[in-house]
Length: 65
Image (cartoon, rainbow, N blue to C red; front, side, top):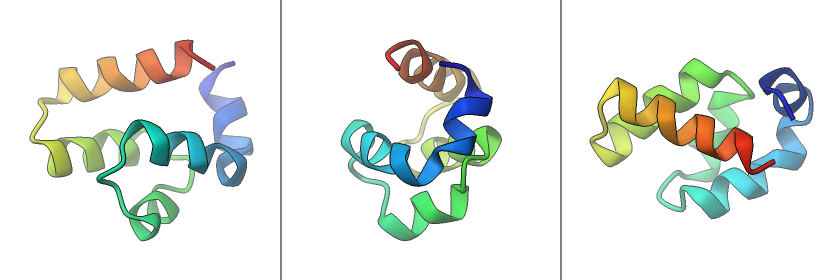
């Protein structure tokens, strides 16, 4: 699955996002609304990750779907 597919199915994928990154609130996940950069930004802010770490986590999430 590529990011365009995740973006198109964001409401369906939000459960998987919540399972992977449980500290993200439902409101934060809704704010992301399929925007990869927004998700990476939320991961940086919430988990204290670097930009590269957040990108790698999202890449890993993408590969698992």
